[in-house]
Length: 207
Image 1 (cartoon, rainbow, N blue to C red):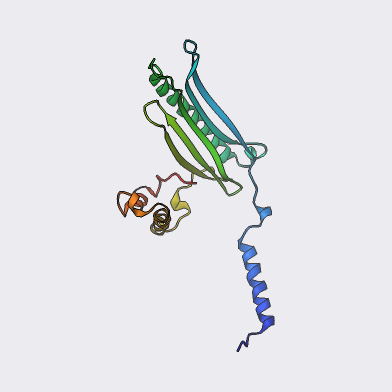
Image 2: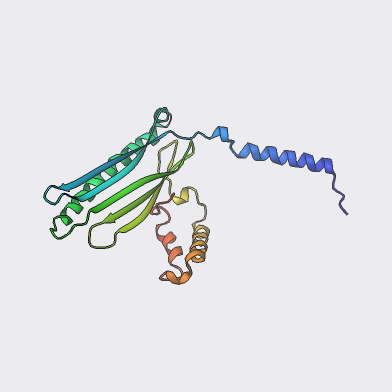
């Protein structure tokens, strides 16, 4: 038999709801950042063969509008990242130009790195790096990386900054990957947990 007081239950529900709204920010509390995506590129064209020998492209994201002044430290961090990516694309271009001297190769050698915004608000700025490299000697290499910044400080956030128990986190990742791909595709059963033990503190690029 239910002997609970309906009126008391309503009061409890209202109290719980108020506590939740005190903790969880509303949509009006979250500021979506104004971002500006830019692309840098280098290429090598052969007049003799009328062919594109090398193509290097790299995209970056910077803060735009009033957010440059609102979050100056993040704006500076993203500007520094742009400078680093400029060095990256120049180095990739130099490497591929060496491979492109082969007169028998008709392939366009490619290096691309696309910076994709996954989250950009007043709390966190997080991006995914999608990169591809083809030097004419394989089928090309595709890879992904990530970077996550504290919007207010511009500091890169590592996993321990948001994960209190890396062991439990590693277990969750293992369960997910084993469930999708099966454990037999990995070299060892403990390889994922070992990775987070060795590199989880500051070597994991995440988004």
